[in-house]
Amino acid sequence: MNSSGVYARKVSIPRSGMWKDGRPALTRLDIELTERCNFACAHCSINLPAGDAGARKRELDTQAIKAILEEASSLGCLAVRFTGGEPLLRDDFAKIYTGARKLGLRVMIFTNASLLTAGMADLLAKYPPLEKIEVSIYGMSPESCQAVTGAAGGFAASMKGIELLLDRGLPFVVKGAVLPGNKKELGKFDDWASSLPWMQGRKPALAMAFELRTRRDSGEKSAGIMKVRPDPQEIVGYELGRDPDLREFRSFVAGRHELYGDLLFNCYPTGAAAVDSYGNLQYCLSLRHPDTVYDLKKGSLREAVSEFLPEVGCLRAKNADYLKRCGSCFLKEACLQCPSRSWSEHGTLDTPVDYLCRITHLKAEAAGLLKPGEKAWLPEARSRFLKYIGKDSGRPGAACPEQGKE
Amino acid sequence: MAEKIELEWVFGHSEEIVSREIEGEVIIVPLTSGIGDLEDELFTLNETGRAIWLRLDGEKKLVDIAAELGQEFDAPAETIEEDVKGLVSELLKRRMVVRKK
Image 1 (cartoon, rainbow over the protein chains, first blue to last red):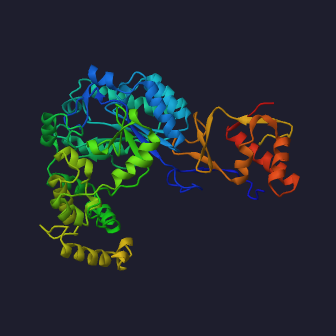
Image 2: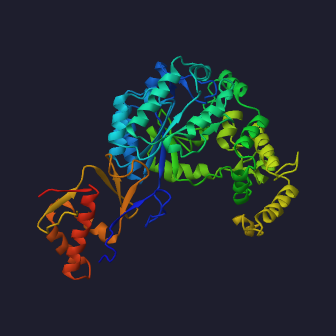
Image 3: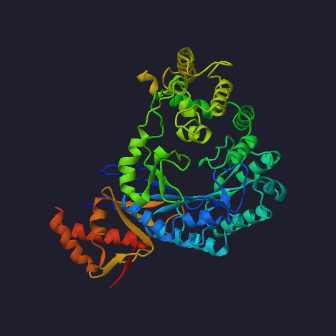
């Protein structure tokens, strides 16, 4: 029967490509456990006050979330991501978490760690999430953290959470955001974050090109986000500071520069889906356009992922400006432009977001992929780019797997 | 040193793992600490391992499992018995099975 004497092997999923009978219908599910947060960051696209009774009343209850997790598990889902708002605000987080783990799901947790208790840390140590916890840290001092989050004591609370994670040996990474209140501390943040055990010397991910309110629930808050997000030139400056040659960006564009025409989604099919706090299934947690939302209370997760989401993934753009620009742009995959950003900025699925377009073009200029002022949707720019990456690689086409298909 | 496994013994799946069948694969997911390395570790079984694993129900003796497999696989009884003991020994080390009787 067996000649090797080895029967069980460790696998890393979903990178293993191990499935015999085809990929599961669902591989990862994001669940927004609450819109509420104990921080009130000005740049956040979702947060409601922690004590928002209306939001709390509308949230899925423990049983409803467990039912979704059970159905996800039955569809072959291996990983679930709990996010918010701040997921640890929920009184039933421990029950939800343990329920997910006992279904054999790996759990990703996005948190600011400020509500992590010793008891919760013990639970996470007893039933490890099998994924690194992702902790958002918004400042390196009480003052800067409060300037960003509006929460007095937030810095100390988050650092206490970090200590609990370290003490229990729980793998985690930290990430941050570039904001007026903390930008002077970014060097300190980089140094501290890269010294943490599971960061392996890497600098933390930094959010900069913040989304506007993804529920389009407050023009005032969206205006506030626009006010604090760095301008495109500043964003490219930060990126150049971290990667002076923009090598990663160039390498990405060299491999991913196909034109999408009127096809809106370049992330389809991913095998992932998202559920918001109230039981709406979405393509991702940012995309809340009514045409792309499925009410799980009126249907099933199975139907949503096998029928509804594939239809969403095939939606076509109609906006002439989008078709002229994004549909013909070789930087489309490298750009943050997507239906969700179009939705939060313009209330449509197919309107170019000038802010994102400007960032990507400036990066491409800095990386030498475009001439100053050149537009990446023009045929001559693309043609020049294709020649450029051939030359850049030293072996024409070698750095660009898609080039042979041109 | 690995524990000597007797064919008269009975084993079942440990409560420290969750066993799942997805798209034709048996996936063993660590539940409690110390089974994997805390992150990114699942386990899958080869064909032989899968056939044995699915029979480790806490009721059947290993010798009976080996006999059942003898009906399914074209292999000498001694080879099958060694495979059964080999898998159980490996899984016992990983705390994925427990001895019931």
